[in-house]
Image (cartoon, rainbow, N blue to C red):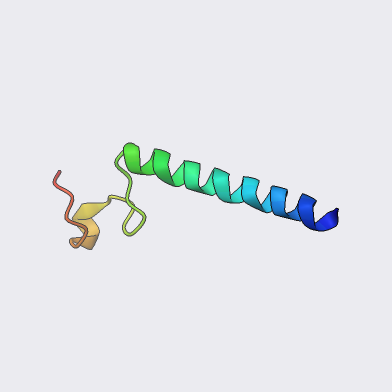
Length: 47
């Protein structure tokens, strides 16, 4: 029973992380540089 509860909680946390990443991607944020392209120069976003 404990294993099932742990798996459900872990799946929920992973789901929330993926959801946040998708929302950030849709809003134009990048995981690599935070879309501060003036400073990193390597992410390929056009401003």
